[in-house]
Amino acid sequence: MAFSHTSVLLEETIEGLNIKPQGIYVDGTLGGGGHSGEIARRLESGGRLIGIDQDEAAIIAAGEHLKEFGDKVTIVRSNYRNTKAVLSAMGITQIDGMMLDLGVSSYQLDTKERGFSYRFDTPLDMRMDLRQSFSAKEIVNEYDEMQLFRVIRDYGEDKFAKNIARHIVMARQKKQIETTGELNEIIKAAIPAKMRAEGGHPSKRTFQAIRIECNRELEVLKESLEELIDILNPGGRLCVITFHSLEDRIVKTAFKNAANPCTCPPSFPVCVCGKVSRGKVITGKPILPGEEELRENSRSKSAKLRIFEKK
Image 1: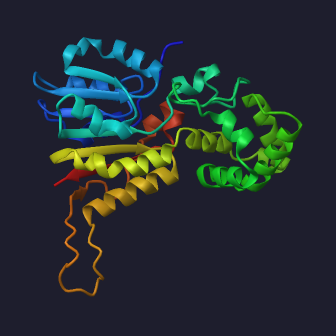
Image 2: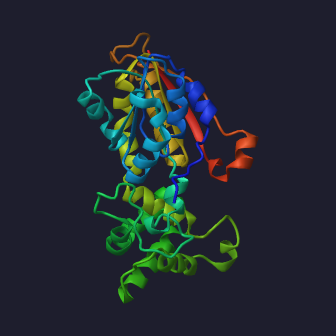
Image 3: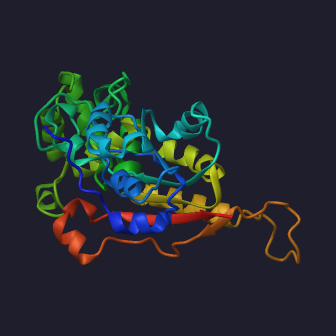
């Protein structure tokens, strides 16, 4: 199956990066290379794009998609949390811009055996990096009821989290939960029939929650943003596309703190904490997809783009 992923907020992100033709740019979530292709197209000789992704299928697909740009583009299989080390290995310390698209690619969702989707009955997996041993199967079968409840409540924002966690624990006492189909049925049984008819697929939120936990997505984001701002050149920009309210909150908070890190009480006439602003938030409110994009790509509907510029 071809790696397909419609790039969300493509024009807005490219514009937000404010690309310098001879600058160095990083796409930390390369995917099929949609955003990267547009960045590379704007680079002249001396300009460089480094694409990072932990998914082998994405690396192969992006390599094919971006080969027309030759040595202007370098692709590395890693997690964007390792950006500083990846760049350091190339002798690069500062960059002119970076982007992250935190959505799951259509390819990952549509490849049955990856176990990301509740639409197919397939072994529970959900690993974005198949070199990792920890998968959704361990979460579903080994987390205790309270851990499951917290994951589903916090990452899935599902009001039936408590009931779903209880049903999972009850079901696995009879036999191990092996497939997405089995999990689907358990979730369905935990949600009242009247509620199942509303608000999309009953398993959507729980599957999302387990995927986020499996890949440590929020931890990675939280731990990385400060360092990613560090490696920007003055005037360099960091563009982040989120699809989940918790992700968006992490980005919003990190950007706000980087722009205004002062911890002095408001009553102090002058700052004494010595914490200096590292730049400015370009997006007061996040940029959302336009009507046309929403029509053409239903997966863009929860996307939000925030942009930070280094001082």
